[in-house]
Amino acid sequence: MASVKSRREMYAEATRAALIEAATELFTRHGFAGTSLEDVAAAAQVTRGAVYHHFAGKQALFEAVLDEQELHMTKRISTAVAQHDDPWEGSIAAIDVFLDLCCDPVYSKIVWQEGPTALGLARWHECEEKYAYGLVEASINALIEAGYLERKAVDTTIRFAFQIFGAAGMTLADTPAAEKPRVRDECADVMRRMLAGLRVPEAR
Image (cartoon, rainbow, N blue to C red; front, top):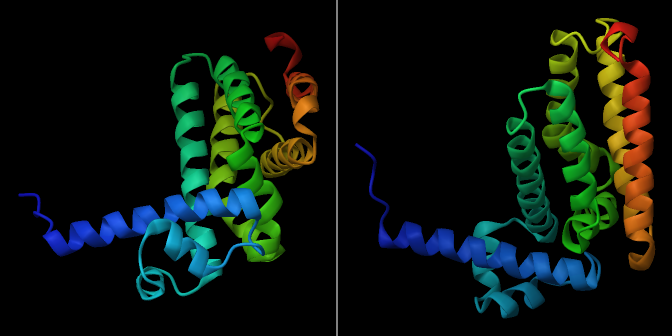
């Protein structure tokens, strides 16, 4: 039997969700350095003590915000891939969904622009690997199993593919809004051609 949450537990969950929502908006608008915990508490209409009840500090709060964005990304990509029986078509869909997300001002700001500064490069890389690396790994292995890619230097292939996604994310984050559609399409073209270059001849 599923346990029934108490009113206190439901209130705690609602408060945490409100803090993450408020922090997401403020970090997107003002950046990590330009946002204080007092700002977040005021926006969420709670006390500063309530913030510390859920998060050890501003960095912990930011990491929770980044986690939410990355979970949204993995869900979107997994859903898109699941709509295709062919792993190749699923991989192309994954590229398109990822690039669309990288053009989203919230995802782009939180993950690619503020993430490295807020968490430090080492911790930020850990977070990226926690979410994105598994998706890339699953995609490459599916392509190998389907006969599209050769079973050769698999770990290195996965690592390179993972870095290519990261390069696209950083590129789009640094691109002015007016130029994003063009650069997004260019990234998609380059990524598809690079993936096609790995495809075994008989599968082309």
